[in-house]
Image (cartoon, rainbow, N blue to C red; front, top):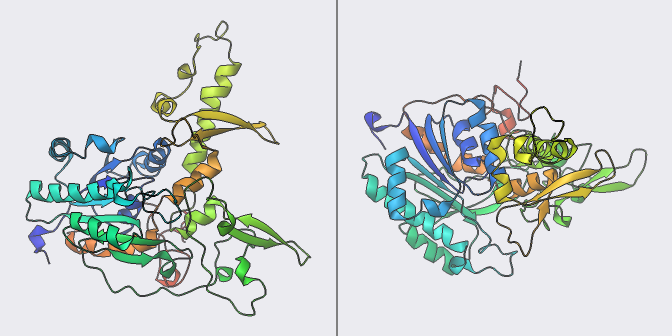
Length: 415
């Protein structure tokens, strides 16, 4: 354990493949006194969600955003990053999982283009440890899907031979998410959280229940399947719930909403949906609708191009993503769809605001699991910091009965 004078009071974090900022949510919930977070993420929508919930809320943290992992992963560029924004106390990693995922028939493991990122994160951690040479050891945490045995052995070599911890989120939450975690801090014994039926939780909307609960005489511990990120799997048959038609014995099949997924992953309600909806509306209005309806000859400002109307901080979406409009049955009779940046030009996959939100959640972390695994980070800090909006309890046992919280998961304040 660290001596009191070695403990941290101003923590600097390098968050690799930071996505929507799940790691930041966990560190805030733990009360870690954060000074700087360097976010490395190539998806501009995920970065927008991250900024919307943290940086734009004036949280007192220095947020640095880097869009390309390759720009900082080699020794020279990593050394420059440390000199400019370090030294780092914590490194978080969530390397892409496509080359390890069992649902990907074309996965290539550690030899794949994305599979190598998990190895590279381990190499970067080792370099940072050697370069900084601080008496306060670097804390690291790296997550991925469950790998094959031979792949785990190869990855372990990049993490100083330390084997991963395997945890399934169904032991901590209403949904499954079986993952491996490489980390160098002690954890408590992994005991299962109370198995609570979805039927008894205020999670599913409009009286929805899990299909397995139909006809059961007693509540069952039914867990939602792992949320996926690919367009073909975000709303497949594994994502089903059912709602009974009023005054009838018939049921309507639906898929989990964005709100339900946010709650089951342990995020505040609206964490993803609110910024994504805001972004899509702003892009639709200022990059397409208003420019199309404006005559430059009569416009007082003489605006001609979409860039004359759109907030300059959003111009980069035009470089990263591609757009189209799809006709729909109600006003405005067309909705914006956009691609994720990793899609190549030969196989473009378009998402509307709802499906993009589900895509991002499919790439996110289970907050209860990661919070459990990183809990002892508090022990190496001199003080704790309170962050508005992140002191809520999860609305299922045993968390929901753990005393008072400043806020509910939906952001409302307890009185």
